[in-house]
Image 1 (cartoon, rainbow, N blue to C red):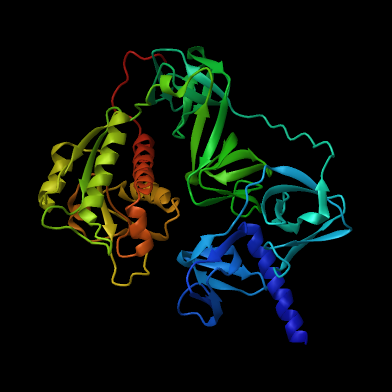
Image 2: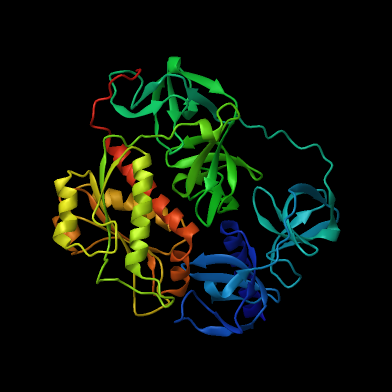
Length: 497
């Protein structure tokens, strides 16, 4: 009996810990029989099997495996590709108050789910969704489910949570230098054109501003004008935690899904300060993109930010011609995917002002020497070889990046790889390798393996145009971060200070 009590106390401690780091997501089994295992992998013991349409909640993740709790309290791990998100009826966010002395908050929408915590009478809860008669609720400290009959509308006037957002400004000069410090003696980072929107992080004779791509620098206050509008962040990864402070040691107060837009209120190093329904908090900037919106500067009237003027990029679409590379079960050829991604990447880089040199633009097979020569002959600043992966075991998935021997290659690889992982792909790391393009190219060089064509889930992503666009944008953002971090070499002329 004592052992059973100790087990359940340990289990409850575990579920509370997990729920603080992962918002429970209702899901349903979509295969006839699914093994429930003791850990995240096929080598772990089978605890039981779940039938099709079994309702459960996902409370944690490890790679492609999901930690789940069923409606009758069973806990374990299942392969995530065999789950689909369960019915969650969208609810307009509202506040409710607990209407009973003590109300159990459960990990999922049902009486069988473990209790996360207990809410007291009169406590205010924020409703973020519902599954049937169960409400998904959260506070600054936890998230869970309560039965709707035991709460009422909270009519208590809300405490003021007004935060000072980041102001927007537009460039008024025809050309304005963004500098690395407060004064003309500091080097130019990039050139801003008239109408460009910037977020003002700090005002002064030299204002510290941030561009929509995340680049931070200083401009002369005389050449910008404040405008109305909102600086926001958009979640690019499948799920990103909002924490109470700028670091992973701080507790999670909310988890935001891909595509959510949240008010931006400042920066602290790599961490972005935001204001959401859960309150003020911090999110890791590498999983976010910035969105600046102002009614005074319509999107169609805003100039394309050509901050890569003067840079040269060599792009290699791997394989081609008689060498199709990996071939997926659905017939998708790696050489075709690589070329499609490379051509899209060329467009993004050219729109940003970079000169782009391609090793191929059609279904041909250049030699390795010819590919390397494209980078050397055109004095490229970076060389990026685009590939996709394959492995005999079809369950292997994820993204992997290789870097060359030239200084700067690792940093370039990390900048791109971090953004590919943020798409929700399993992280297979950044590595060196004895590939000729990596060993003999004398400019910073990387070879990316975005996903596995031999994995059904990854192959489906590579056949999805939306995913391809996001993967290309990840490459572009990483390349841009690396190039702008090196500084612009060419002298800016004809621009204001």
